[in-house]
Image 1 (tube, chains in turn green, red):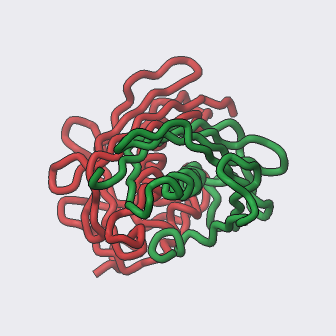
Image 2 (cartoon, helix red, strand yellow; image 1 turned 120 degrees about the horizontal axis):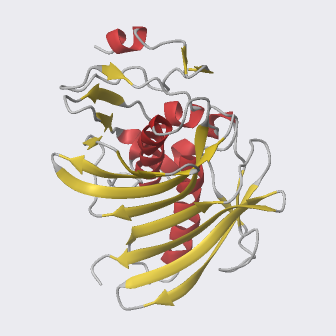
Length: 124
Length: 161
């Protein structure tokens, strides 16, 4: 992964887990991912949600590229640096050109963000 | 080139330490007066934004994108756009909060209209759609060369001091 993903930091994936499984994705947030109040920045959480949901989408596109059309994110609780942020996502519906996906991010057993999105398969 | 806006960044804003930008060499875009004093480490790491006050009282913000913001296929990463939205809609929401209170994001809806390319200048004039005693509703259209590439709407919860 290059560009912004590499710049933000490594998102890890447990290869023994499948779409929908808890704790399939992991990210260890640092001080640079915080806001001025000392909590994980909302933009950071949305960045990770986009990647967790987007990776799950791309398992269903037969090698084609899909891009985010909508991403709706709810902020349930604040997160901290230094504790693993866990992510999971599952496909809710697939049409010829669209993929609907839902997921969440959690830390220390607490739900921080729920997210739903729609991806468009480019060229489909 | 950049030294001017950088040297004019205040030490604190809203009583919080202003972060030094990860890239201090971003040029001040034409039509903008000053750098936004970013207090969030993640924002200062991800970008530097600039602003101007318009005659009608609104504030227009811009973000000059660079190669950091590439999603590795030549397109601006959605995470950057959503982070910029959280930043500028937050300024609008904070402006609508009563004195001695602040607000946190409860929900953000993001819509991606077309691809942006690293190097594009993204511009937005955030709007407060509604403010109640406990909540603020905000939205913004994010433009590149006058065309909307991204839209965001968010809900903020006002928190007492």
